[in-house]
Length: 335
Image 1 (cartoon, rainbow, N blue to C red):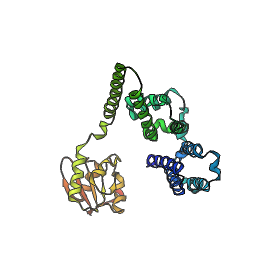
Image 2: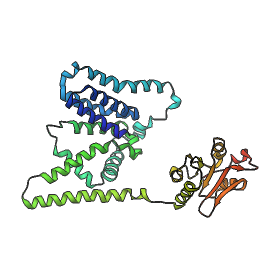
Image 3: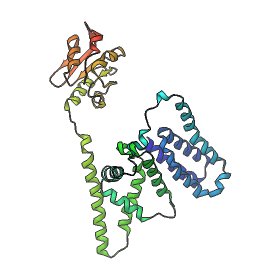
Image 4: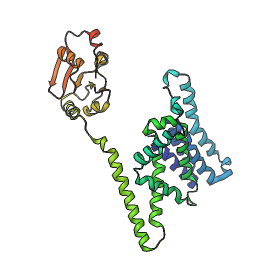
C-alpha cells in the first residue's frame, strides 16, 4: 500500500506540473499525505516530489496558491497524527533500535546485507542487479532531469537513517522496487541501443537476453519456497472446515502462531491455542481445529463434542462441552 501511494504521489505530481491543474495538485497532495500516514519514512520522497515542482516552475511556484495548499494537505495530517500518538506512549512500539542498534550503520555487515543479499539476491536477482547499475551509468535525459536519481537518493537516505531496521527486515527494502525497475529498464535499453558493428550488437543482444533470463531464473529460485506446502495437513483441515462448518464460525487454529493454517480455513479466528483457548471461547470461538494432538487438544477432545478426528487433524465443537475446569484448562501448554 505504501509503495502504491508513493508511486501514485509522484505520478500525480508529474501530471500536475505538466497540466497545471489545481485538482491535480490536490490529488497529488492527498496521495502523498496517505503515503506518509502509512509509513512516516515516506517523508524522504519530499526530495523527488519537490524537485519536480521546483524544476518546472522554479521560483514562480511561490506565487501559486495551490503550492501552499499542497504543503498543508501533505504534512498537516501527519503532524496531527504525530501530536496525537505522542500523547499515548502506550500505543507505540519500541522503535529506537530501528535506527542503528549495535552501531551497524556503514559496517561490513551493513553493506553485505543490503547490497549483496537484499539488492543483488532478493530484489534484482543478479541479472537485474547488473542492469540496474548499467541504468545508473547510462545517465538521464533532458525530459526526466534528475528525478530518478533523486528518487533513488531518497530511498538510500531511508536505508541509511533506518539502518538496523533495513538490515533486520528484508521487506523494508520494498520502496526500492519501483525506482529499481526503472533503472533496470534504462540499463536494458542502453545495452540494446548502443551503436556498434554488427557482431558487437549480436553480443549485446545475447548479453541482454542472458541477464533477463538470469533475473527470472534466480528470482524463481529464491521465491519457489514460498509456494511449498510444508504441512499438507493444514490444507486438508482447512478444506474440511470450509466445506462443513458454518460460514460465520469462529475457529481456533493453533499452529505456532502462524496464520497460514487459519487462512486455509477461510474463517475468522485465532492462531494461538493452549492456555488461551478458554479466553477465546469466552470471546465467541466455536471450534478448535488442530493438526497436532498436544495436551490442550486432548483435554478439549475429552470434554467437548468431537466433530471429526483422524490421524491428520481434529475438530472439536467448543460450544458443546461438559465438565470444563477453566482454571486448569488455562494452564495447559499449547503449540
